[in-house]
Amino acid sequence: MLIWIICCIFLLLICLFLILLKQSKTPTGYIGILMMRLWNRVYLPLVKWTMTKVALSDQMTILDIGVGNGVSSRYLLDQANALSVTGIDISKDAITQAKKYVQNKNLNFETMDVHSLGFAPETFDFVTAFQTHFHWNDLDKALSEINRVLKHKGIVVFSCETAKINYFLPKFKKPADFNAYLSDHNFLLYAHHTTNQWSMYAFQKE
Image (cartoon, rainbow, N blue to C red; front, side, top):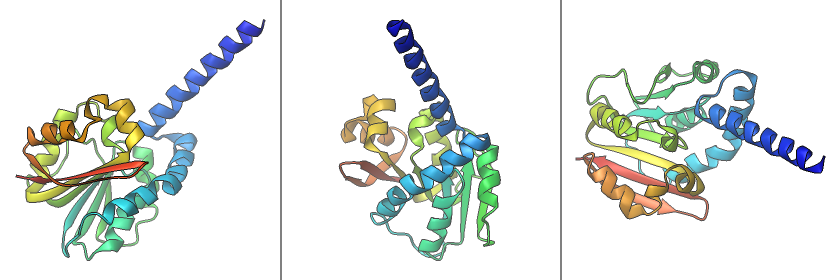
């Protein structure tokens, strides 16, 4: 009897983990809304920390990838006299939530997949990916798309919990391996910083 109870609890925990993992990739419905509100508290400090490590110039066009309900995009717009900030997410429900808080014509949100970006070549000066790139199904294709829409000498930033890299992208645990991988995709290391909790990389398009 005890073994049966333990097995049931174990299965329930696995199911819960899979549900939360799916929601972290594509937040939907009421659970997705709750999780995005939680992310605001947990991940906005990551965004703020990251942006102390890179400088934003005036009149930049910024693409923010995997925005959830858009808090990171709104924060980016407040940090500089940006020409525009466009936040994208694969989740329609996330973008619906993000659009509720739009109060600036320079801020725009769109439902979009990072593997197929609906923008013209060399549209953006600056691209951010907070707590998201380890979820992308095809990192090669996503990087190719980011390279395409980023202007020459533009900057792309990847920032997330170090534990997420170790779990989802173990082959990039070592910074040198990630640097080499991005170099193969026409990006040069611009900045790299870590804490006990977070890791951020900034690369410049060659």
